[in-house]
Image 1 (spheres, rainbow, N blue to C red):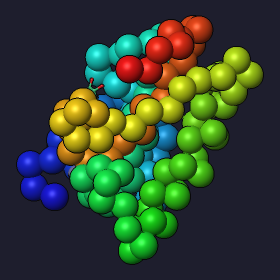
Image 2 (image 1 turned 90 degrees about the horizontal axis):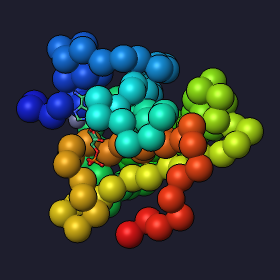
Image 3 (image 1 turned 45 degrees about the horizontal axis):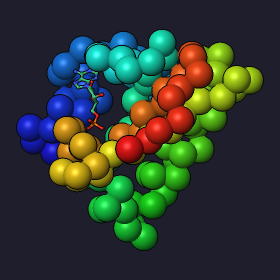
Image 4 (image 1 turned 90 degrees about the vertical axis):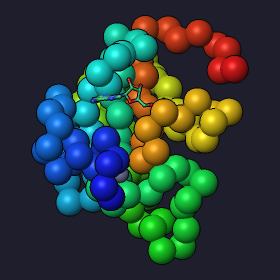
Length: 114
Ligand code: AMP
Ligand code: ZN
């Protein structure tokens, strides 16, 4: 997808601090962390948001969900827990229009979500 920041990161055109990669999934540290550990996990195929999940791209999305617990464990978050967030659209505060799941942890996070 042209002009998509995260597609460019997957392609290596924009540098990132890689945490995990396989044929379907890429994960990297958020450039502006909101917690001691803040990682973004994305499908390699361009899906604009969770609102665009379909039967056809569900396998790419499930590949992302499948590795989130593994990545969290690698990051040392499994024992104390962590939060997974995906923002969607204008009201959801989505700034990059490529589906991504935030993994946040490394401290006790505030209870409020909105
Ligand atoms: P969202 O607001 O849910 O769309 O999340 C987008 C996230 O991408 C934000 O937390 C940004 O800090 C992060 N971000 C933006 N540009 C980059 C980048 N070049 N490398 C890593 N993370 C980025
Ligand atoms: Zn993209």
